[in-house]
Length: 117
Length: 111
Image (cartoon, rainbow over all chains, first blue to last red; front, side, top):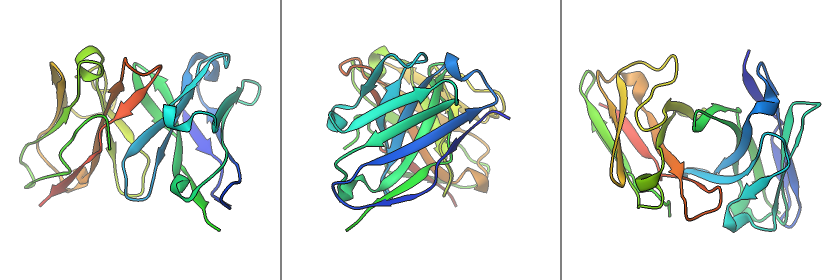
């Protein structure tokens, strides 16, 4: 079955870092770019970052510059998002998604990250 | 504020047709393909349309997409109560390195 399964919910304090993982199965993981998109409570989708198929190139939205790191492990079919210096505005559901056919065709179930003191 | 502009809400009766607009600029919609996503309550987004007007396998032909200039439109015919969801348009923005952008989303209510 082709799917993306993400790690569980996290509760973090302001200033901390969080790592969200996403495990792919059912397809050739190494052939696709992977992206992270987040959704704050009651809000729309916001693109955060991407990593290319080989893992050698990443890019991110300007607003996350210096705070976001995306990595992938081909041996584990896993892509990770690390977000540092967390603040309350980072409270959101974080989705990993696969880019194919010029769009995001496969999505993880989402991981809720709550930032609260 | 989202890069792409969508109406916050639309509504129609079951069996009717509805369209959702997505407005951008020459650096995003005007020069790149548009995709559309459906997000049912409490669920992850799902791809409905890619490359402006193509449907992935399994998406019924009640859903259609089009693009003209710097605007795109999602059409849904034969509305069903199960179509109640938030709909998002998305594309690249050529002014941003690898930047993908979304619309703010449109809540569809099937009355």
